[in-house]
View 1 (cartoon, rainbow, N blue to C red):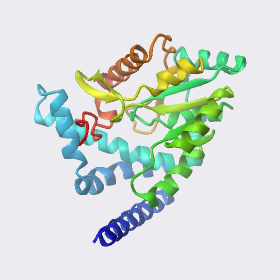
View 2 (tube, one colour; view 1 turned 45 degrees about the vertical axis):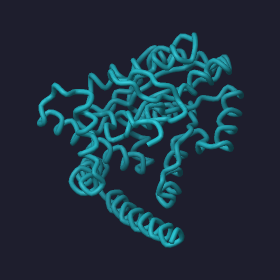
View 3 (tube, one colour; view 1 turned 135 degrees about the vertical axis):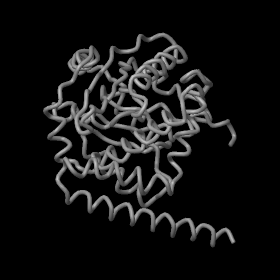
View 4 (tube, one colour; view 1 turned 180 degrees about the horizontal axis):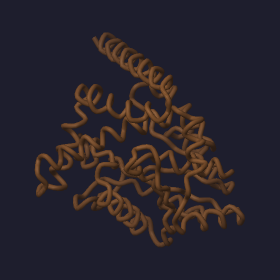
Length: 295
């Protein structure tokens, strides 16, 4: 029976990946300025209803913002899903996306700190959440000759994971999969003075409970711990989608002051909270961020 169940999951994974790959291939035929909003529409109208994304985003929004009207929560949830679709196809559009990021200005005091760190051979951990397009700043740095690696969580769908991992490698710097082998490579790169990206805003059962958007959430402190261990800069950064849906404001905030892992992680939470307050439709409310441990 277990083998039958596994075979069924394998078949569903293969089928869903085949459908997604076909959709992506069709989108890539279109001009960039059309494919990005088109993929947002497909995610919002076709994929999200089947996957239950809007319902999950609405539930999280109701938990954090019980004072909002149902219409307000629904509008934000749909913006979240649209942004996710746009981000997906942008990250598969390597060449036009990189061209766009090459001419996108970078702001914030963190950029000067990174440039100084690179001259000094000091490593840096760039930290963000599933907000806007988190690959946009990494692509922008790559076009300026600053490669940035990354550590990513393996997708549940093994077929999807194979090709999505390749898209991350296209933006410069080595990419490591979470796990003993990937973490070892990540640490070696950091010890050599490399720059790396970490996304810290998903539920982590082995993390610590810290307030996030007013509710305790299990949070990884690994970014801060690594920064302390290897004297690395810890820089919050964001790729904030502009109103035209195609361009970004790329911001590198001032490095977080070294103190202790809990305090530094709380500073990262506070930074992301401010961005979400400004642009609630750009954070991925679909994640089970406040998942009860053990469930």
